[in-house]
Length: 283
Image (cartoon, rainbow, N blue to C red; front, side, top):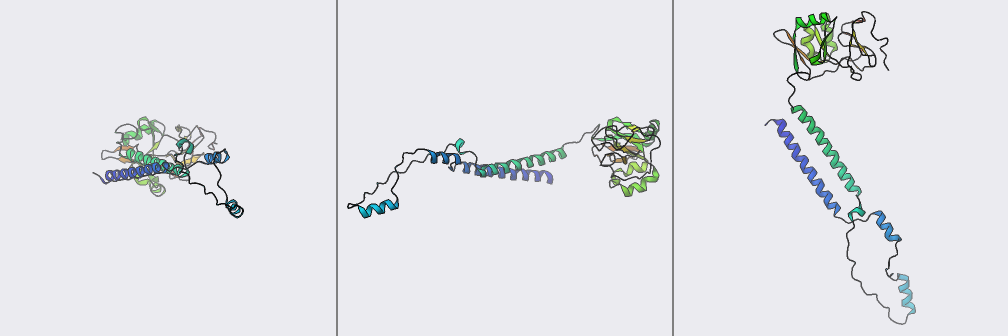
């Protein structure tokens, strides 16, 4: 068994012990009779037929004035204890806090367990979410040229554009994720996730400006997905890239890399013509 599986088993056993102990304490607390405030107020306001015992002053006054011995009140049998109705008793503050803590602990364990299961769940072997072989670099560049500078690959929900070889050195300094995309950049291509980082709209290309321009709120990106305008918090997200020995591009669509921060401009590309959107300000 792997250390991860052993750790999960130990964690599950500890969680079961904590939850069991909490429920046992809750049962013990519920067995203790405690009258609610409403019950006490009713008892105080009710007419109870109970003979009042003489006060100390009355006993002293009777002893001084009476010529006969005082009559000592006989002891009465103790009142039989009747446990309170649980519905009348209600939930005590201690019970409420204990149940809240157990519930939050259970939710936390559930979330952790789901995250672990998601990590252990087998990844897709084909389509989006898997590693996709897009094809030979030469064929990809031919498709980019045929698309007017942009190549959309629907199986991976990605845009592929050319990356200038002269900008690779700048990318090595500007991109914190450079090691994940190094193979593709050195081969002259970049694979961009199709959705806008602002609110997730699909970003189309603009043939005139040679930029990506989001029609939803006006975010604009240059041809390699670096932000140029609009409300987006960063550049377009992208995927890790590798180039095989056969010079084929493999893109891992199961690992979405957050785009470069605002102000990153490794290629220096400006709009090469009129923008498809009148303004990149959005709202």
